[in-house]
Amino acid sequence: MSASITSAEANIYTVSRLNNEARFILEDTFPYVFVEGEISNFSAPHSGHWYFCLKDAAAQVRCCLFKGHQRKLGFTPKDGAHVLIRAKVSLYENRGEFQLIAEHMEERGEGKLRKAYELLKKKLEAAGLFAEAHKKALPPFPTRIGVVTSATGAAIKDILTVLKRRHPAIPVIIYASLVQGATAAPSIVNAIQTANRRKECDVLIVGRGGGSLEDLWPFNEEMVANAIYQSDIPIISAVGHEVDFTIADFVADLRAPTPSAAAELVAPDKADLLQRLMRSNQILNRFINQKLANRKQQIGWVQKHLLQQHPKRRLQEKMQRLDFCELALVQSQQRLIQNRFAALQVLESKLQQQLPIHRIAKLENQLNLLRQRLNNVIAIKLANLETRLANTAVKLDTLSPLATLQRGFSIVSKNGQIIRNSKEVMQGDRVKIQLFEGLLHCIVE
Image 1 (cartoon, rainbow, N blue to C red):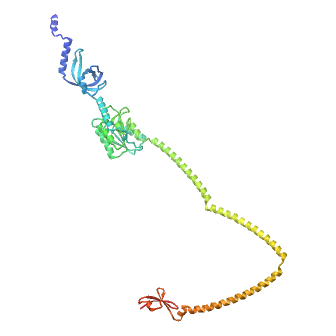
Image 2 (image 1 turned 90 degrees about the vertical axis):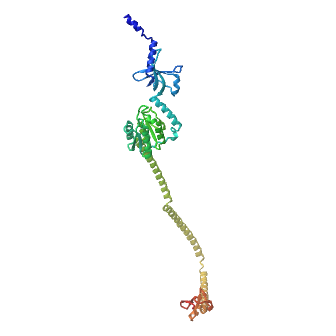
Image 3 (image 1 turned 120 degrees about the horizontal axis):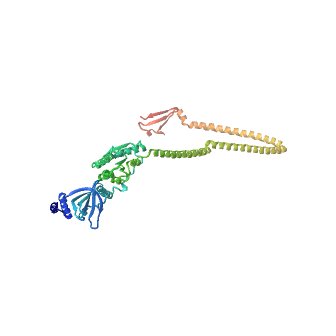
């Protein structure tokens, strides 16, 4: 027994030796390894070195990254970050702890995507893709609604359900697209460009249901952002849940927290429209009734004014005035006649008192004498005038051209001028010959 122990003592390891040899064995066996996991217990002491654990669901391993390798990373790791490290497998001899000495680290999964997301967001914001000046207004009453999403996903079902409830009369055009995976971004771009090329709708919903950052990543691609920015059709971005923000949300004309909310925003509520229509109808009816009442009142005033100015009314007034004037005239005539009759009676009474019968008889004799003398003078005067008239008629008949024509003479005229000499006409002239009875038109030969 003692001999066995004595021979074994020659192979006894000290702790330092054992750890040292174990370290060499590990480093020779695993020159470099790539390990992926989640960071925990991260610490950065004043020395500048980083110490942390890398774990997965079942195990963890201690790691360190020395100061000289940190400047190449471009980011500072933190607890919960998912990273991939390139490291040497080693052993920390002082504590006998297995560890990885990292020389390079890069973000993996959501951490890497989050960094790319922030970089692209800053780039596009600087380029003006998020500016409010480029945002297009949504149509208040769209005639057709386009949807860019998966034709079989939950998002399209939610959108169609909401649109059917709010306004089933609006047609919906689905531009089927992939919404997850490496080829989803080109598929989304193609769907947006197809909608713009066809011009079938006047508003477009682009989105999908919820998921992880990796699931939603196609909506963070630069090509999708450019396609949304270049779209002539107003676009509502409806990606994921309310807490999910993608690049598409910032570029789109409007961001909806969910696909269902996008449908609520884009489609006017049927019940609300009917209520607004009823209110408008009531306002319109009140307006029309008020207008009709005003017009009716105006017509009443016009009719009243027209009746006052109507020719018949004015004629009646004139006729009435004429009746008054006629009555006044008759009364005035009656008063005048009465006055004259009274004056005549007074004069007759005075005349009866004087009785100038003798003077009247004398004046009647003188009047008869003067009448006889006047008749004699008139008879003599008429006889003298008749004699003078007869003599004058005889002279006139003697001097009349008609008497000359009656004796067989005629009057020759040319152009209204009487011809007294044959030299006054030439061969071919037209002349008129006035006879006692009739007129001759002749040509001089």
